[in-house]
Image (cartoon, rainbow, N blue to C red):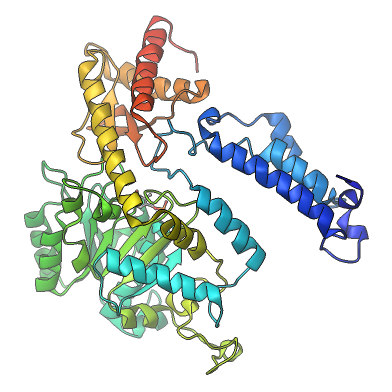
Length: 495
Ligand SMILES: *Cc1c(COP(=O)(O)O)cnc(C)c1O
């Protein structure tokens, strides 16, 4: 393996391409092997903190001389690859992070070689994205005439869905009038809805003051009577209710709103029904009793969901589906002359994805999704999702059988929240103990829990969107919590 040509600074070469592609091939193959080693031995690679020496090495100088691809490949393997978030590891339960699939590695390599721009035009990548969207429409029970778009994630999908809803409420004025006087549009969601909904309201110019937070009932679902009262009172005071946002799987504990009831209410009241299904929407693929949670999802006007969480696909990829594709297109369509379509040729391929979202230039996100579904098959995802829910129940049983641990919320999906604090501990100390346990286990590389607040108290939280987790991993993680608890209660760790 001669590193000679690879080491030549590209700035002194005629082209940005390697001078010797055969030499490049050897370095690339070696790096690909390192990536496959990394993924196939994911259990050996928990998160570890990135050292100041390493981050100093990331610094880019204004007059970078260029190290060439051979040294770059070494740097990537030594200084970049080891410092991931750790969500490829079987005992990563923090936040709601997907694990990534072997097929994703293949798809990302191919997508990089193609370097497609999926804003529009007539080429293979847009046909693949259409197939992914069409598959989603069928999986979620949306009509074939629905439109959709792959985006960075549910946050962006929510902006697009609410913009389409605003478009239907206001017509063309939604785009021309900005913050000028228009009917005061009001949206409704539960008080446990994700923060991306408030952000979307801010971004589409309506503001969080036009987002009503409806309290949840004892089952965690948005209270339908309070919703009806809020809509009536807003109408009476001259505001214009336009949208209700239901949640399929809250981020804290994974509860579902009654989507069927919300769909029926929105139909009667002529309101747009949007569902935040970031990860919970995928229960449509799961076995019972989890599958029935998503009942009513198929009646939504729009749905936002992620592939990078509970479909295990590499970051980043989410999607939006919109039942009324005319409102969707009318909210974003923009075709200046330099983007004029053609009947045939590369400028053909209508409809273009750039007319359905914010971005004109778009990468080939669809390939890793398509590759995952094509290679693994739909049923394999359903089985993995079902298994994650079963493992969360197993964790709940392990928590129940440990006298030191207390379940903080019922486990109805893939999320298990519990406290390790002794009953007699003052609130502030109990909160700190749970937070310290989470931090200690992260630093030890034993398991990653995150924390959340339930009834105002900090608790440990495991969200299992991890196809690599085994029953032994769950038991090991709980044993590790008990061990760390014992250690911390003896001698509190200094901050
Ligand atoms: C993660 C999540 C979001 C945000 O999705 P991103 O893909 O991170 O933008 C929204 N809603 C819920 C319920 C989530 O879990």
